[in-house]
Image (cartoon, rainbow, N blue to C red; front, side, top):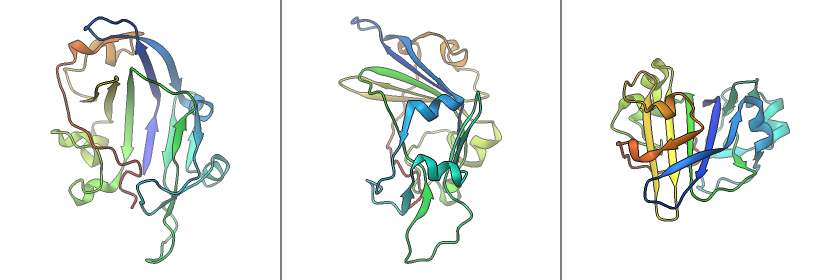
Length: 196
């Protein structure tokens, strides 16, 4: 699986009114992912068939690499696995900083084969078939945004070619207002993203 993450903007809660307005607190782009996140070489907490490796191993096996504006994460796709052996080498990263109330806006591109079996095993499902798999790749990805507060988590998805992408998302504004984002979507998260 290839995950191309060019920008992760973390916007922190800027006020206590009911209108949700957030200001930019972190802008993580390209190679800054390598210092903003730590690599977790741990057993998969969801018991998937995956072997998370440390940063040095990930870099030496070309499972992660970065440039000034692009960050790549992927699983090993060359090793032929035995039915009874360990899982595929992959990467799990965790931010060094912790967040409470926030919005995270991330433009993504995926080369993810979980769509082959009707999205089975892929933890996020939206009404749009362009939110994952070949259709997602064909439109050059899109934007995912996550808002987390003490009482809820909301997730939005806009395809790259979607005319309804809010300007504050599309233009990478230094503040966003989630009240203007009228689409609400359910989400289920499985951290190994179908690598079981």
